[in-house]
Length: 411
Image (cartoon, rainbow, N blue to C red; front, side, top):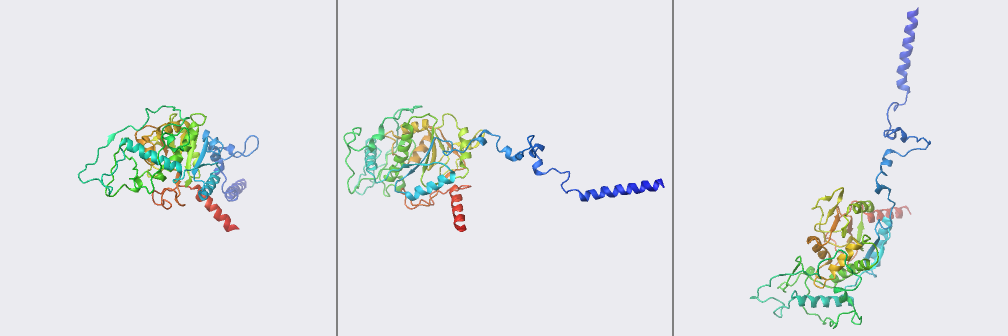
């Protein structure tokens, strides 16, 4: 009898244990995603919910805790734009809203303005004085068949050695070329206006490094893109004027200015990338290029700890770059040297400074600021589409356009 009761008790317990596997929740005894990190993720001692582990990881670095800056952590951001290009200014205003930043607008220089005409006359006189620009020997504008091409002569086209902190508050060098004749600071005697029609030889760009190239007019003439014309001079003058305004203003040497042209697009998460890169720059940096063209900027090794930051290699284009106030002053002291001023396109001038290691240029790779090539250009024919096209991973302007399209569809 006792054995029967024991058997019944054992069978009853076995049935209860078996049923428990079916009746208990399926996740009993397992660790959920929210519990995987620590038990404190569920409740803190105060009884409030603790953020998930990943959310807490997002705030462990000093960069994570920096508040959003409407200047991206820089001193100021300026867009060079011709006053009449309201279409471009409207697009840049939309870009500023997409990034939640403040852009200022700096009036560009018209290629047909009187000051550009004066500058080009001074450039012509300067090149002729140095033997760079020679008149053709025949009326047809060709080199004679028995005349050998002249040899290049080495030439250092700057006014003395570059100072670490030059004083650029006073006008000097090529600054004086743009002044009207009635300005007491203007060079005397004043140069005559260009003849009309102007049949003189074109002013060639000086392409070869720090050498003074003596150009001759060949049968084919000078290629259009190798001529210093009004558009090239106006682009140089606009950038130079903005840099000089920043350089001459009072402020700390490490104050920063970002210069944008009015046809750019920017990565949506640019602020975080930029702030991280800025932390990796050495104290003596002059120029940082988040925007460039015709280069991947991956030749040099990244700065240790900053995989997107590298010394600049072979960048072209000036549509998006940052200068320190110290770097701006050093740029001005070089760019206004009469033998160098307006000698080529501005991005080619910057390339000289990189190649000759005269200034400390750094680039962010991959590129963070690109040209859109959507609106007609005042510099070249058409929009410039196809010259060099880069693409962003997450375009701020594309996001803005997608949102506007969605909101329009919902109306």
